[in-house]
Image (cartoon, rainbow, N blue to C red; front, side, top):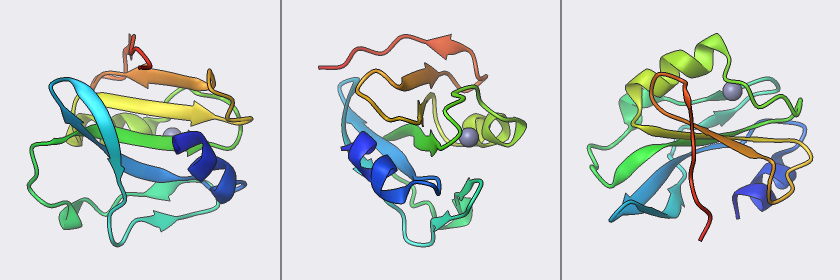
Length: 110
Ligand SMILES: [Zn+2]
């Protein structure tokens, strides 16, 4: 689903928050006011509801480089503990996951 949304948004970025229960991410939450820019997805954090099922974020990098940018690292530190960056060409393995410090973590696809 994330890859499809990323493809739909290409060449713009796609961004959303991740919802999880019992450590399993089961839904992505698109927020009203999330703006897709040509180079970055802008998360309007003030509109984020207080919702503890939201555990992190996902966004796409149309460049294909899945390393977090400085802006990403700032966003990671504010928005939860699991952050996924998917990169062009958005195949099922075109993703990387990071913790709130931007360190790579392993996630399992179920
Ligand atoms: Zn990014």
